[in-house]
Image 1 (cartoon, rainbow, N blue to C red):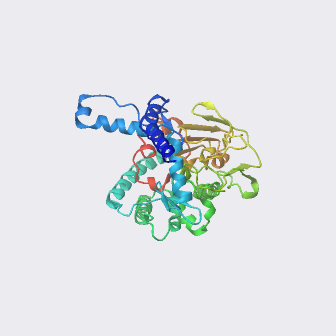
Image 2 (image 1 turned 90 degrees about the vertical axis):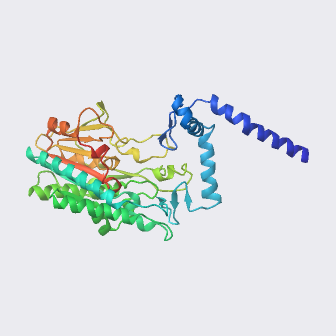
Image 3 (image 1 turned 45 degrees about the vertical axis):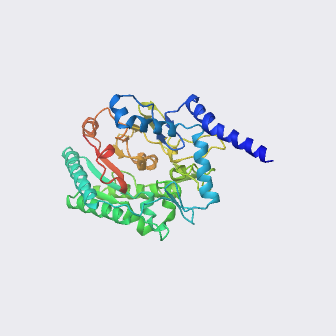
Length: 396
């Protein structure tokens, strides 16, 4: 018996020492991890400088860790052990609440430089102020729409013994909208509106975005505000719930928070979409290619959807043309929080253009506006990015 155990031990030892490293080096190495949604390390470039200062060996270590044989299986096993067996609250920097919410862990020793965040917001508001003046100069209308991110809106769902970075979030929100109002820049703070509604179905439990219901509430506010500011019905009122067909996709969502846990967190959370009951003719182009679908749904009956269902995910440029020349034109720009709004907002405009400046590089935002002169321009930003000067915070 003892001899058999010794043999098993030796075999396992040999596999760990020889087999796994050999398989790691000989197996095809992928550039991106779908499970972790990130780029993986590439083969280090040798230089005498990197060799002498030790960076060359560190880069090799990172490369081998990223491409370790059956890495995804090891990660899933580790997360499964911590979630299902050890029943940990914090796994892979995700806080798992008793109500089934997945929220990012905030380290206890984390210190927020609120002064620096405020200075970044002052700078972005100054840029928005100049953009607003430019848009007004040709007769256009600009709106800034602030959307709370999931962990911001659900900050009270953190267990009492966990931090929820409320000091950082409050600073961002107060600074942003005080500065916008000082400069008389039209804006909508959806966090204030959501707090009054106090609806839990506005946000996913296992994803960092809002749900269709949260997007629908923001859509109503945007359309009503445009009509109110124009003092006339320049566009039709927002679609009422009875004018939409709501469809709940059958399989549980693959939420971005759950991705951090290798999707092993058990959830029955579903994703909802909606179509206007009265259809209008349109042509839709994504990055120059004809793309008629507002919702990209995998027809595999076992497939689980993710937030990328909305508009097929993030794209550099989307154009929706409805050939209704009596209506104004719209330009929306922002990160992924625009995606769930787009299948609703286009209904009210002749032409709707959508930019994500993280992926669009043909021209600057100013050049794009100069070329197309949209009647309405909407900037949509989540509150974790109010002071972000890159991506959709970089106009020129």
